[in-house]
Image (tube, rainbow, N blue to C red; front, side, top):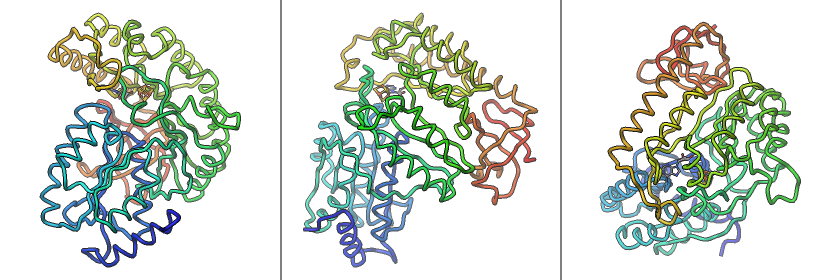
Length: 459
Ligand code: 5AD
Ligand code: SF4
């Protein structure tokens, strides 16, 4: 039996050299959900790249198809089931294709059982804890043709899994995995397991390698980055980690997500304020403005504590850009509770919001709570929330007209041909310019605000 990951990769390459349907073996990878899933997919792509694969968006021409799935809301799961069902015909046309499913959904036994029984054309199923074992699983499937279902509880962090990043100038850098917070609505602690941090040495050397390779934007990732360091042999906090990375020379911007308000410290805000490279942006999900609902959500902070942190951030970081996640229609929420969420967003003045209607996740404590509001009512509240936030975002954008912003040029907006750029505060500015600017920092004079998107001119 092969003994190492690299041996398995070599053997996959040899098999696929014979079995491939085109010049090169082709892989089609679809990633659903959050940035952590994107980062996991980049590891799988790293393995496939070393095994000689090229990548395609077209499942029809692929030798290997993978869906990396998300379980956060029911809607996300329904989409995956729908899209997996559609793969049946591809398998019929190309029986040699390997179909694999991984990610958070596969960590739920009910889902894995349903795939086993109702989707017999799926060859490999593996969970979030088995990413590092992917070369072995794929090799075994190729060799013996049997279906493989691998979900394990291995919480070890493997530092030697290769990564192939989707972009050459901005990239994700996971600093920790899992979550111990158990917010009562959330499935993540059940599907991604206990919190564990990478060593600071591993994170810092990866950051340094990215900066040396020309990365202009690095986003540190974790479900709750403020818990970074817990359980490590070394004594280090997230703020200290940020300061160590910030000390690396180079022209780059450092971002991170996600912070939890319950342990967002003044030290973290001071670190942002005093840093050279950290973006002046804080993504701090508050979920609800009502103390009653926050308690039922097991968030372990109050509206008042949240507003204190925001006040401190505004006092220390001029023009700080604030964003948040909000859930509408948590069980037991009334219109009065919802109005507290509305008043909080007016008080803070967020740049943008990620808004969700509550989705019942079987197995979480909130799934058993009685609900008073109807789906129709929740829909109306949701629309009211969006409308209120649109006005706030538009007025914030209008206040930026005439200012000069340093932006990272990201891509061409195919719809209007303009270059789409991002400010330190995570706001999009579009400007006319040459493609060669993509991946560079430029100064832009803001000339116009179009709701939450700005227009400008390169200086
Ligand atoms: N229903 C709706 N939204 C949810 N989120 C997490 N779980 C649920 C759920 N069951 C949202 C939270 C979290 C974001 C990533 O997804 O707002 O911050
Ligand atoms: Fe889910 Fe709460 Fe953990 Fe975020 S902090 S992943 S919302 S349990």
